[in-house]
Every structure is written in structure tokens, then in C-alpha cells.
Length: 119
Image 1 (cartoon, rainbow, N blue to C red):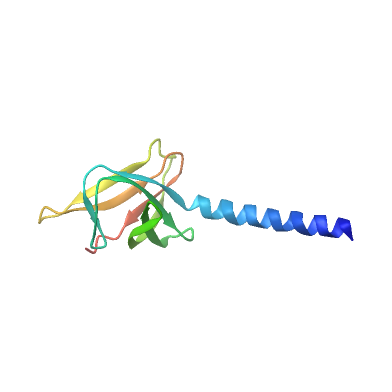
Image 2: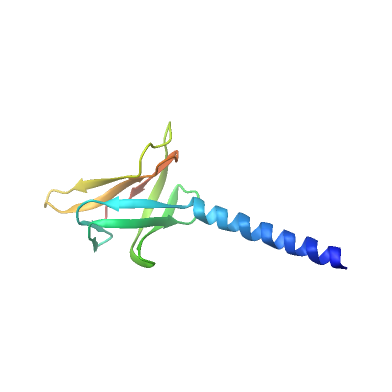
């Protein structure tokens, strides 16, 4: 009986570890150097977390700062030939002069996110 309880707890802990690891794999750091727009929301310069569910290609992306979701948009997960060397954000400048977050690359990862440009 005692052995069964130990095995049951071990299996539960492994399940929690695997689900936590899977969630952690779908997030990354983003540093924004100047104010940008994401899905109509203005983001100030600063550090953020990008998080999404699933492996793509289409995913719903949340941009989070200090545990608060600052913007939500759709993004496409794209593969790289080699892992990115740095965390990098790419900004699109539009004809009207506004800037929006366009792509996010994550250090050590072989993927990047391309955000919808519907403003």
C-alpha cells in the first residue's frame, strides 16, 4: 500500500514537470527599444515576455509585462536554419510613420514568431 502511494506521487510529479516544461518552451524574452504598437495596443520601451500555446504554425500570442497581458495578437511560428544567437525584436515602420512589432527571435531557439500586421 505504501509503495503504491509513493509510485502514485512520483507519477503525478513527473506529469507536473512535463507540463511545466512544455509551457516554458512556448515563451521567451522580448526587449523593445522604442515604443511600438501590437494589435492596436501601444507598448512602451522595456522588457516583456512573449508566450503562446501550441507549436504552430498559427498561434495566439500574448505580450506580458509584470504579470499583466499588455497585448494579444495572432502570430506564425517559423523555423530557422540555425538557432538565433540573441533575443531580438524586429520593428516594422509603416507608411504613416507608425511602428509595430513584426518579428521576435529567441536566443538558442530554432524558431521565430512573425506577428500579424493588422493594426
